[in-house]
Length: 397
Ligand SMILES: [Zn+2]
Image (cartoon, rainbow, N blue to C red; front, side, top):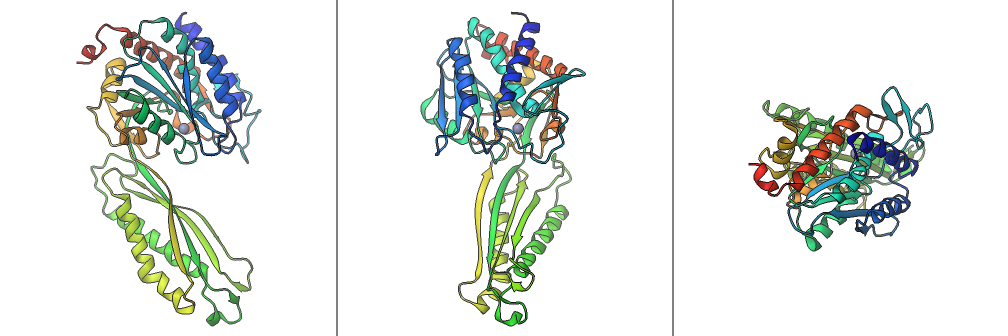
């Protein structure tokens, strides 16, 4: 097979992958079965880890020897919703135009998954000394949820890989670090009353507003204390405040208000400490006023999700490998989270490196350039050539 054939195959595989609506809220089992049967036909075994409902799964496959030290090609197969977006054609029927492929998920990130799959027959034929693994996950877009079960399975039951390439779109540049995140939900429980006599109630929206103001002040403080040498953009931890919900009518003092907030944390900050600071503020400045009206009133805050940061490490096995294969000698950092931080946290060095531009992710008429797909094919062939060397490890030195 030539590289040109491989690209052609990747495009038709991608078209098939796009046709499965794997928006995170949907089951992905049909797509998983599709990938599994493709690999089966090549004689490649795969294993699944399911979510608690059994309607979603991650897929793990190994090509080459069953030994530690493999290279993981990692991609999520869920996509963000198309709801409310203005698409010029059916987002789940891939189309081509001006050297681009368009459809929901082409760049984020079924394109990379299709490329890995297109290389599978090549990998299978070669005499790999180092295994290449596929790690395809569910529910990445709703907080990197699915991959956690896959990582647990690898760490507990399988030979430890040496490095992970998370193929999120980076325009084929090395991303060695990203921010982590914490998501929280605060629920203010007030006391309802007729709005004609506010003395009888505790207004949960007013209490919530004080939390909002505190978060705004906290953001200003984080900006003021930013280290100018911090490589991230913006160069400080940022506060998310995305959703607020409260009240039932204009003339009723609202009993409940919920606020979904959180932060995107630079690796040198401690998100737990920042979170505790907000909790302390609530306890000291918001809760007492509510409790004065009724003992059962107050604020509860729950941590709904955390994603580990990817701590930059230019000497990691993952970065070393990509530098060697591509000749690139620079890596940068981004502010969005990926699964790479979770792999690194589990002791498997990871980088983010993949085809297409992140600016296309989540957009209507999402596209990936064929030239980016081609560049990734070339890269994957280099990876395969390297894994076939008699002493791949030595080549890195
Ligand atoms: Zn993605």
